[in-house]
Image 1: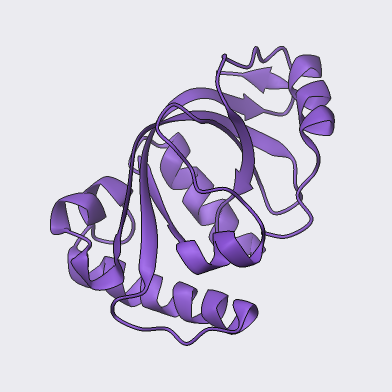
Image 2: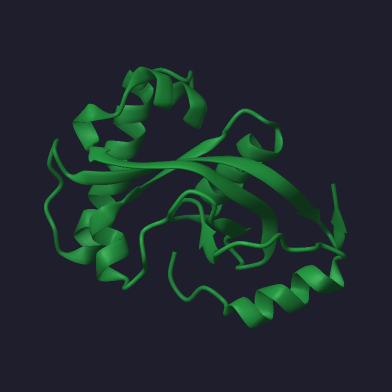
Length: 160
């Protein structure tokens, strides 16, 4: 996601919604590269099905963003850059795309939860990300696999 709001703007919006941000290294991030994908992935998280997310290391590098680390607190924004979730990363691992496991794909919780589904969907997404950052997708491209817990869900000025 590009043009993410500053931490100060996000903090003010969360404070107005009554959300206390836990201690930790703060990050602002979003899911997907379209309004539809963003909404679908956020709904999977809210429903409790999705507890992991995967990013392309090359995109982090191209965007000048540090790689996530365990303990990081992520403020997740939707496609309008409005805060919708607060999560805490519980584990982070960098692996080649083709080394992602079926267990991790199931935790990520998309589609039918299978590794085959994960690979199809993420190959498509990472191919778009590679085009954006001037790289060619490859089976061994480095991806960052982050498992998280949900700290807060922000819904129209309320938290749950």
